[in-house]
Length: 407
Image 1 (cartoon, one colour):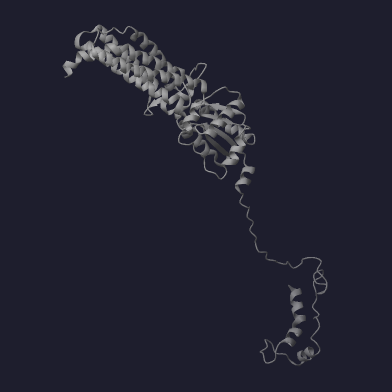
Image 2: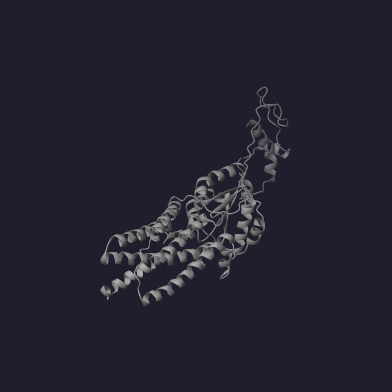
């Protein structure tokens, strides 16, 4: 502090000489002071200095320096916002292929209850490529995926993550989440090396999903399983021919009613039908994998949306009720008499006719809409056609006997 005072005193003559005239001064200079000013100012006063403190105003102090304060403006630093590409490089990503069909009920179940919640949870760390197997391109990629894993055939939903695949809603629901977590822990999982997938991804960039033509999906579904669908088409043709023959037979029976037959084949056909429908009901209700034959794809049929009536009642359960009702009506027609027996025979014929027509509808769906055939379902269709023929004559005779009462 004393050093600053001496510096100011030494500079005061210069400041005073530079001051403009006519300005008021803060002090009055006497004669000695004026003389000193004319002589360029007084010298430094002889003030006893504290030893070791002030040696010279011109020399730098050895200790106790006057602190110098400098104000530095704070600077803010901001981290750059990463782009989506940079995010994908920072965070591991699991990429998944999901083969589905719009007619598959289990596919919708997997989408709503498994895939969508997982995509919401993992966000940018999970990429899903959904491939519709009803489209020509999608079906070709589906066949490539089966060949890649060495599978002769499979159903949908069919999911691929890394070098592993999951088939059916049960496997996907149980195993997909831990597989995703494992893939992310290991640094992510890229798109599988299935032939055609890279090209498909390149074509999809900036393009709308391809749509099947008006009848393209029809032929694509038919050629999915050539052997199984050929059997379905043959059964369908036989059922239609049988229905046409039945119409001719009904005309001949209406001309004159011979004694009604007993329909001895009806109970045997119903017992076999109950076994077939019961097994299908078990597969549909408990969502287990069906045991298929050498041709066809039963699981694709059983997981389709057409496997449930109005999306609620499994077709297999409906078949159990149908075969059971036809068997019960036959028993009543054979044990009762009079009007009750005729009513039971007529009811059995009506139910077998409805079952035959409904089986024709389901058999048409398999090769042309679902794109897969089920030997269990085709067996049931053949049984229902046989039941229709077994109940034809007794049923028409019963309707003829009830006609006067109804008129």
